[in-house]
Image 1 (cartoon, helix red, strand yellow):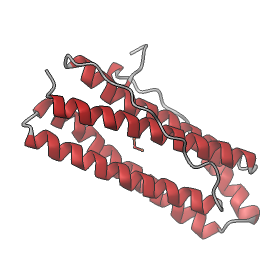
Image 2 (cartoon, rainbow, N blue to C red; image 1 turned 120 degrees about the vertical axis):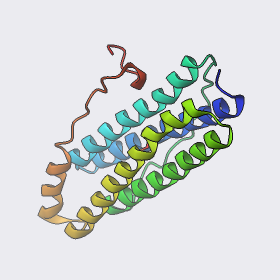
Image 3 (cartoon, helix red, strand yellow; image 1 turned 135 degrees about the vertical axis):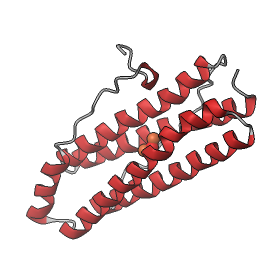
Image 4 (tube, protein in one colour; image 1 turned 90 degrees about the vertical axis):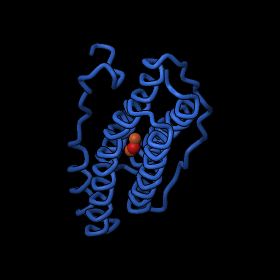
Length: 176
Ligand code: FEO
């Protein structure tokens, strides 16, 4: 059985992960209305990945005999001043999420909950990758600047990102 404190904190994290999906989907909508389809696609893929993160917490709570509680998700920002501002927002958001994952790890150690600790290790590693990817995106957009042909070329590159369906059922893959 999952300790109450952990299950409650995981419910909060489900909310954070779905909010992340909302934020990135909102960025996708903004990019696409700005004519940057590649960056829009990139953010759509990011949003789908965030949903798999939420499902990992959802499934973990269920597997350990408790019931996940879905909390309200607030409306995300809908406009950004520039592509750079959006990518900087994404990086700041990933840093915020890393802080949340670290707090969860600290809690699982304090509660002596090794099952949670093992599950959370995946997220600790994932956040290193998430921050690295987001900061490289910020760097690339900064290098190009906010307008012109360079931005369109970079947009095409962002558009090559594809969503890989996670193979493990614990990632919320119904076919897994
Ligand atoms: Fe689920 Fe991008 O952190």
